[in-house]
Amino acid sequence: RGFCPSCGARRMAESAALLVDEVLPEQPMRQWVLSFPFQLRFLFASRPEIMGWVLGIVYRVIATHLVKKAGHTHQVAKTGAVTLIQRFGSALNLNVHFHMLFLDGVYVEQSHGSARFRWVKAPTSPELTQLTHTIAHRVGRYL
Image (cartoon, rainbow, N blue to C red; front, side, top):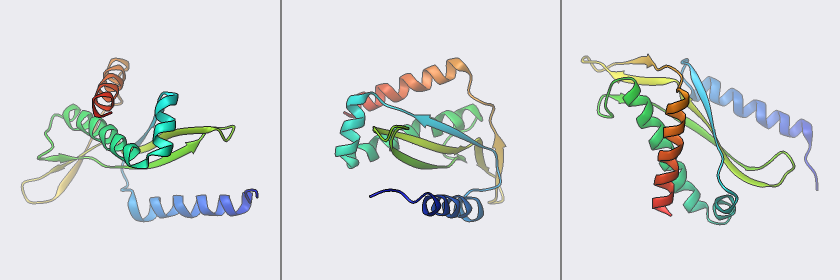
């Protein structure tokens, strides 16, 4: 059994078109790629429900960071993301990791019921370090 490159490319193009045309707003996006220690990769591969909970933790940590950096709370500001869970590395080895496309900002609810997008600056190196520590701590506490 093998992979047909033209079928794979067609599916990838169709998925990308669906995301661009139907799902993602016309706002700046940022890709976040999260990898995990080998032991967790094996755990995620064999226990998808645990992987799902961990994905939720990661989403909440990054979303909270964006909302706070925009100067708001979750009551008035929302962000969004789509995630591709990749289960292999470049050598087709087991390597469960997340590719997340996050809005590069938040939608803030206006008084008349509409929402306005607020761009947020890219995370600084210290912010990335703090986010990594927060994710590791919360995942460790969950497990």
